[in-house]
Length: 428
Image (cartoon, rainbow, N blue to C red; front, side):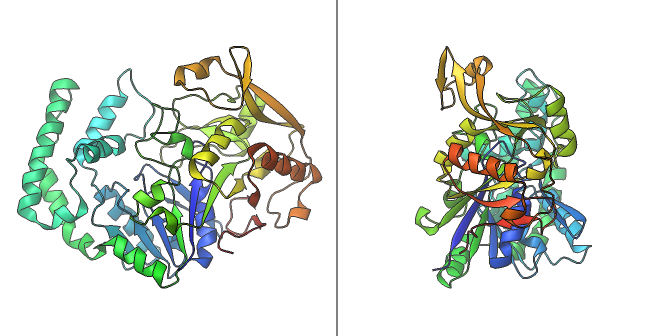
């Protein structure tokens, strides 16, 4: 059997997973997305050229790597085809390497309209407005139109009419916004059927065959573990399971198919949108992290909130996903700080705990308990050996290992593909 590695973010997303997946696929035969949709934004910088991927797996920039979109992903076809076109105009072969699960639910224009209508109200939670949540709601409600449905025109038209009638009723009567035109949607979606048909396959059988042949598989998560719909800071979460267990349900392979879970973490913490953030900084250090780290969402362009490393939440993500080892990214953003802090616990109701509060409202009363580390004046930018790092930077990494309870197996020291220190390769 081949080896299978899961790469997930262990914070609130934007940890740099895309770069790490691209790096590790040098030793893989296939990369598989298993949850989320085009709300993800994975940024890769190769030879100075920036690429942002939203739906296509990050292995697409490695020639010959198969890229699979599993059944756990919700697919907006216009965005997918636009992403394919953008890559292929640069000479990157996509269509012949991209495999789409026949069971992937489709995001319809009404899903997007519903998502955006909700975000205009008082209950806004800061979603990307791309229809992800409503599409997952239909999946759970057994109303989804899946990719395979597109190839039976009569049945697709009937089912599309049913689901859009429900969506449009909500748009017009509850949210009091314009409904979405059914005929235009039907024509547009049927017009895309012929182009995607060669890509739509039984991905479960395909992945099982690869694994049995000895292929090495990389499973790429989207968003971050703290946005998991079950284990994140609910309700300020995404609409899918972002922890490692979703690699099984979102690809169709059983849990014993996986050998290693790499948890990607920034050397500090960021968050986009609403929701709790106990270590958020509103001072000069927070402004510096945002400026030096260029902290703007790759999907929405929104400024990210910045704060010190929160080991309480990362430890919980490690438990939820059974993380084997950590990859620490953006270490270079901390260069030049006199002091670097790590939150080791929360003070709540006079007691210090190492666990997150049970209720999201309790986060407002949480006081972070910090351990301080000396900063370093030397640069970590582009360093490729552990000994090449400043002594205090190495001390900080050892501190993270001890506090979180998981070894640091990889360190990213810059945005480029080659700016890394690999202490233990997940495929070894």
